[in-house]
Image (cartoon, rainbow, N blue to C red; front, side, top):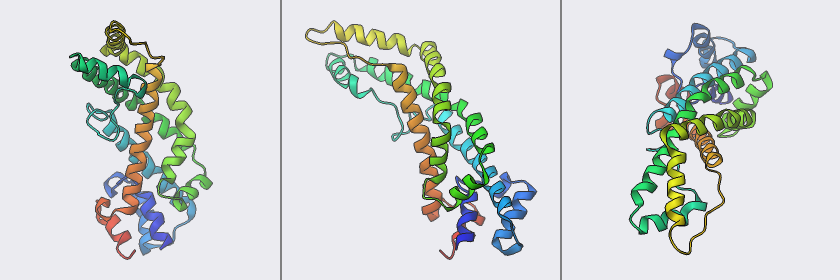
Length: 237
């Protein structure tokens, strides 16, 4: 049972045999009964699988609509600006609010594309103990590892990208326009708010949420085991 779980973890996030080199295929074959397998090889297989899996998750979010069309991760008008958004919609300026949300999501998608090398470095730096902890860990053990080891670096990388992209697509300009229109309405006050920090934080939350969702699904949901090898591993569980 534990051997099968380790193999499934190595294939986490839907990595198929076509993505593995001959060494990985041989190693994973050992887990299925084709020969003995040492723990170091299991760890190597896991690290290669995680590299492919994180690339797939990031690729999905970095596509146009990766955030904007994902109901669970779409960036909406911030809570601190909710009153402003409702007020602007009430006076016929809802299209500006929608455009503002769209531009925030575009900035998040642009930043997501830069996450791959950060995750790749985290995988390369993963120790044998780290790998074994992920193999034996909970439903989001790999995601938790990445969150603990990459959050600060990703935030430092995301922030200038978000700032630049928001300037490029006009998010900041539109935000200032929204604030001007809102402040022109009697009896309103300007919220104290950092748009750049909000978009950066929400983009990272969405990224780790996506990783965790994919990880849990492949562990728990038979329908998510999309390769013959995964189905074979979990057949008797």
